[in-house]
Length: 146
Length: 335
Image 1 (cartoon, rainbow over the protein chains, first blue to last red):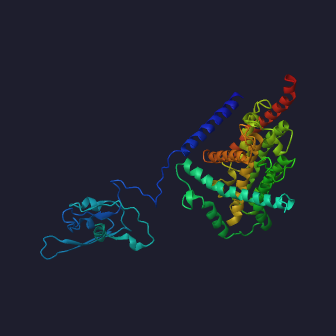
Image 2 (cartoon, chains in turn yellow, purple):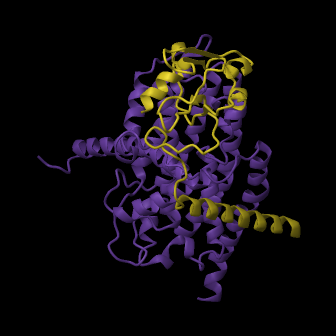
Image 3 (cartoon, rainbow over the protein chains, first blue to last red):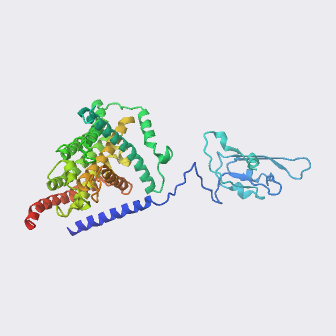
């Protein structure tokens, strides 16, 4: 019989303290980000799809068209092509297409790139209903970023 | 034209009561979602209108434009009868609620009895809705709803009998009138009538939560087990009416708690009694109901019935005996 009242009392106490907690939480600041209206900046090490790195001096892509990334990619989603222009020593990047539909973001391409010409972007707003949106022309993307 | 003539009075109160019930149903959903949001540190509805205030309107339009799907092999009469059977008693109960001393649709002597008579029809709506749907989840939910309502009607009615023994009347307006002149005349603080008045209030409040199938007693619509409970097969406005009935019942339950224990339209410090005090107390109670829903997890059916039969009913019965003893013994000690 004594256990009966003790249980009711402790139960009522815990219910009251629970309601106290939710009541206090009601007045705490909101922690959610209102996504389409406000976005978070992705952290430094966020691994989005890859992007080309610009050479700060010339403004051109750092890529030397060695093709190592293309070879390192386990799913073959990178297509690189370069032209040998008149009067230039090195090849110049003419095409860098990433097929993001098969990319698994493993990072082998970034690891294999000796000159450090590709890096992970911090792009994450990638939802689309069309397949073509995921064939990303990275060279064009770099030019548009200027 | 005489504004106090009977047809005009009837029409005004009819429109007023239906508008009050419908607006409450709509805006309590909004309030519920806002409270739920802020308890979980979210915002809640915010897109439609300022602070999401037009959200209930848009939801209503959506519900009305939905196709009303009627499944095969149902009981056509019972299926259509259930939603109104849930809503009409709830709206009818508003007839005797005294919003202020003069703002009562019908100040009848048996107001309290009438509300409880209609409250028990409410169970029939749930049962018929579940039974008529030809859906096993709906039937299980209806059976749960009925067993729960039967279990909680007993302590609730015993508490009400206790109150009637103290007030000597079933007229709700008269009960409020007895509680005039400050906060210590409210029945929740009338220690001289019964020292356990606070417990009476808690029993009544808990029972009204269970009667309206609100969380944590919402076993009738336990989503994880029973899809949507007894209104699984209802779509469009059929579901909407169930929803409105449920919220109207919450308003009725909280109104009764306000009238019986918290002094209705009386002011806590004896000044300017009126409809505003009734509404303030009513919405504080409704807010508590909402906060309870977003604080406590759902109980089990056994926990629910145990609480009723092992805790609430013994306490309510003890209260009844104590009150009877107080009524007889108190005048003997202090003649």
